[in-house]
Amino acid sequence: MANPEKAAAVGELKELFNNSTAAVLTEYRGLSVGQLQTLRRSVRENAHYAVVKNTLTEIAAREVGIDAFEGKMSGPSAIAFVHGDPVDVAKALRDFAKSNPELIVKGGYMDGVALDEAGMKKLADLESREVLLGKMAGALIGVQSKAAALFQAPLSKAVRTVEALREKQEAA
Image (cartoon, rainbow, N blue to C red; front, top):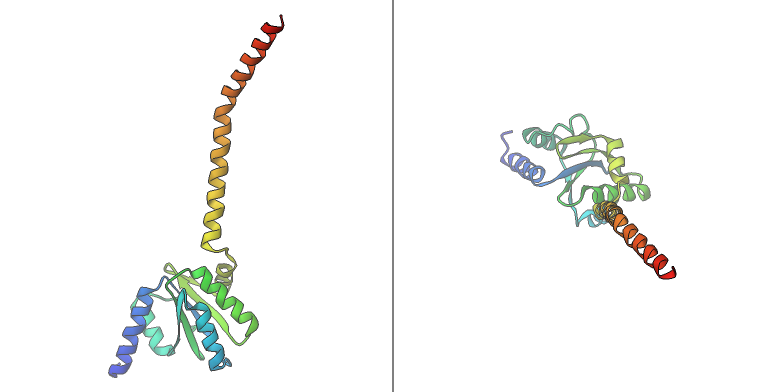
């Protein structure tokens, strides 16, 4: 790689890989510039969507230790470098692909694990982080409420027994 422009491009891609929590590889053959801009806007909050050169991307990924894209870099490729919630990005790409079937999600990686197309679909089907945290908090509160009721039961039973004895003595 004698060309300094290519070396700089590989360096930039390596930086994007290192600064992202996940990456999603797509093929955008057949999409117009306007459609790509719409897609970029839909993922902008959580990711940087960039059209990439296949060979340079393979080199950059290999140099940072990512093997998820080997054999998948063909055709016009673009990668969503995720810096926010990967689930939101996967959902946005899935939703965009439903209305624009030209977009193909080929796979990706997250937390050092390679994801194929089916893995990306599973990721997109997950509920958002906020919803999952809310469900977990609700479950924890429910367990605490049951524990509190369990600990109060003997005390309330004793109070009811004493009250029944007092009423019995007053009646007698």
